Figure 1 (cartoon, helix red, strand yellow):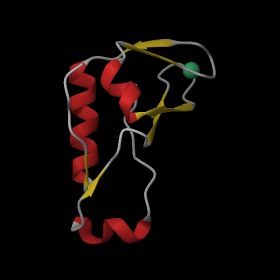
Figure 2 (cartoon, helix red, strand yellow; figure 1 turned 60 degrees about the horizontal axis):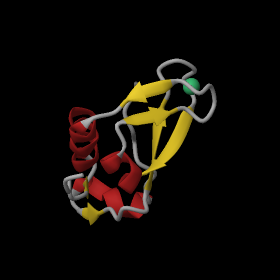
Figure 3 (cartoon, protein in one colour; figure 1 turned 30 degrees about the vertical axis):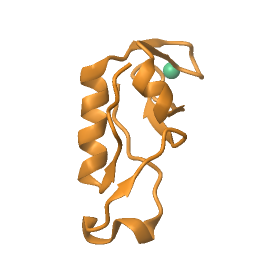
Figure 4 (cartoon, helix red, strand yellow; figure 1 turned 90 degrees about the vertical axis):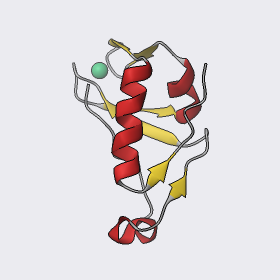
Length: 87
Ligand SMILES: [Zn+2]
């Protein structure tokens, strides 16, 4: 699957200087590796689900801790952080 770029507010990511803590209610769009369409998942869902189902084609992606960590890295690169609380 492809990894996110969180929707962001342009003002918040100037120079990557500002760090934003994401709440569990934030939706992260993830691209489907089958149909390429994005489905949004709440951060809380990403933290707790073992699989993600594409809203468009129904394709199921396994989604584990390593995937979550990839997203965490990508987001932190853009100045967004979230706590990786255990399931
Ligand atoms: Zn799909």
